[in-house]
Length: 187
Image (tube, rainbow, N blue to C red; front, side, top):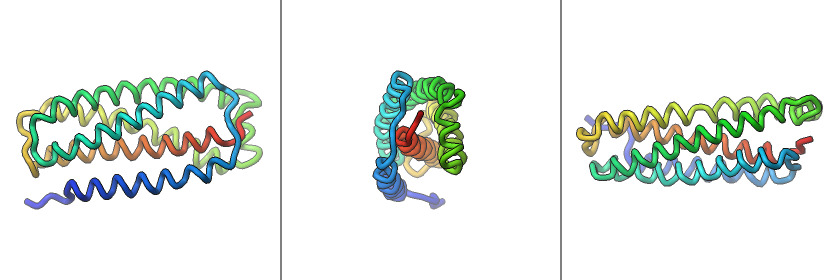
């Protein structure tokens, strides 16, 4: 049975999504910055570390797709570390969201000056940023459960790779939109 995608397809998709999203950064740099320094720093640091660790995690998928069983332990560890960082980043993001929604806060400023930024960027970002945790946990559990059945071209390898790739894409979308929101004039 021929698989619907190969490791080369995943690599090209990863590079394309990364290039597209990182090209959006300069568009956000023409705007302001957040005044909630501590919360923003903790959330931003967590998000940055999470994206960096998730990039390392997704690169461990390629040996998995080639059927190297010895990579399963390292990949599982990286998945759990990424999941912990995602959880911490979500917690810090919710802490920052309190200040965002405060009276005379950034949400009111955005709603007055550009409501589409709030409805499209902020709400979409908050929605998408929750997906990596269940996707990462599902990939880690499947990897643990089927560790001894991993073979090149197997369906379980493809499912794990797809879950990790979707998690990584959601993390990048949330990261780029988060950078964009940090650059907006936040009261």
